[in-house]
Image (cartoon, rainbow, N blue to C red; front, side, top):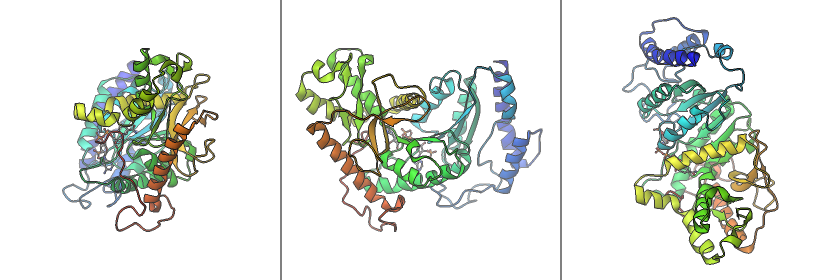
Amino acid sequence: MTTTMTTMTTTMTARATTTTRARTTTTTTTTTTRAAIGRRRAREPNARRRGDACVRYNTPAGVGRKADDPLGVFRLEYDISMDEAHRPKTWKPTVTVAVSGAAGQISNHLLFKIASGSVFGHDQPVVLRLLGSERSRQALEGVAMELEDCLFPLLREVDIGIDCRKVFAGADWALLIGAKPRGPGMERGDLLEMNGAIFVDQGKALNEVAKPTCKVIVVGNPCNTNALIALSHAPNLDPRNFHALTKLDENRAKCQLALKAGVFYETVSNVVIWGNHSTTQVPDFVNAKIDGKKATEVITDQDWLENDFTPAIQTRGGLLIKKWGRSSAASTAVSIADHIRNLVNPTPEGDWFSTAVLSNGNPYGIQDGIVYSFPCRSKGDGSYEIVPGLEVNDWLRERMKKSEEELTSEKGCVGHLVGEAHVDVPDAGCPVDLEDTLLPGEM
Ligand code: NDP
C-alpha cells in the first residue's frame, strides 16, 4: 500500500514534469524509460499523420499548436520494472489494457471497474493505456487524474495518448470503444464507411504493435462489421481473438425473462443473442433456462415471447435514449466487464455466453467470413469455443438468417475495407443494397 501511494504521488508530480520538460526540453531526473520517451517525443513532436483515422487531426499538422506540445503517449514517471519487487507475491504478471474512446461515456464507467480489480480479478495488476484525440486530450488527462486519485492498488500505470500506434503497444487486451455516432440524415452505409476507416487504422496498429495474443473487443458501432474490418487488417493476431459486444443484449434479455417469470435474474441462464448487434439480433428464448427448466415451460405465453420480448430486446437501447436522453453507457460498461470476465473465468458447466466472433467453421451453418454472435464457452484462459447442438427451430432459423443476411450486406458495403470485392472506395455510398436498419441504441 505504501508503495502504491508513493507511486501515485510520483505520478501526479511527474505529469506536470512531463509537460514542463516537453515544452522547455529541460532534463530532470529520469529513468531510462522516461528519457527514451522524452527523446522520442522530441524527435517526432508531430508524429501523427494527416488523414490518419486513428489520430484524427482535423487541422493541418502544426496549426494552432507548438511543435513541442506534449502530444503522444504520456507515461508515468517511474520505472515499471522496479515495481515487481515491491508488490504482493500472490499477484499475477501485469496485463496491459488499451482502451479507445477513453474519454467517452462508456469508458467513464468501465475504466474504474478495471482499475479496481473487479474485472480481471483482485490479484491481477493492470496497466491502462488510454486513446483519445486532440479534441479529447484535456478530458483524457482529467480521466487519468481521477484514476490516480482513486489509489487503486492494482492500477500500476496509466498512459494516455492520441496515436494508436503508441497507445496499443504491447497490449494484452484492446477495448475498441471509440466510434462516431450516427448523425441526423446519415445512412447506415455512411456510418459503416466512416467508422470502418477508423477500424482499418486501428487494426493495422494492433497488427504492428500489440501482442500477437491480444484479445480485442469491439464496442463502437456497427461493432460486428467494425470487428471484421479490424481483424482483416491484423494478420499477426489470431482472428478468433476479435469479438464484438453482444453481452449487453444478453443481459437485457435475461432481465426481461426474469421479470416476466417473476424470478430473480440470477436464475436465468443459457441465453444467447444470435447475429448482429442491431435490430435484427435474435434473443433466443427457445434454449434459455429459468431455474434449470426450459424458459418456454416457465413462460408459456408464446405470443409474449415472440411479439413482445423479442422486439423489446432489439430496440431497448433506443427506448432508453428516448426516456433518459442519453445512451446506455453504464450498463454497456457493465456488460464489457461481464464479457471480459466470461473469457478469463471458466464458464459454468452447461451454460454459455454471447459474443460475436468470426463465423468460420461454426456448427450452425452461418456463412464463413462474418462476425456473428454465437453461444460460446471458455475455459477461463481468454479463449472460447462455440457451443454446438443448441436447438434451432424454424422460428429461430428464419430470424438468424435475416441477421446473417444483414451482416453479409454490411460486409459487401465495406468490401474495400476488408480486402474483398470492392477494392476501390465507392464514390456513391454503399455499393450493395443495404437495408437502413437501426442499431439498438438508435431511434
Ligand atoms: P461517447 O460519444 O461518449 O464516446 C465516444 C468516443 O468515441 C468519444 O470519446 C470519442 O473520442 C470517440 N469518437 C468520436 N468520434 C470519433 C471518430 N470520428 N473517430 C474515432 N473516435 C471517435 O460514446 P459512448 O462511449 O457512449 O459509446 C461509444 C460507442 O459504443 C458508440 O459507437 C456506441 O454506438 C457504441 N455502443 C455499443 C454498444 C454495444 O452493445 N455494442 C452499446 C452502447 C454503445 P474522442 O473524444 O477522443 O475523439
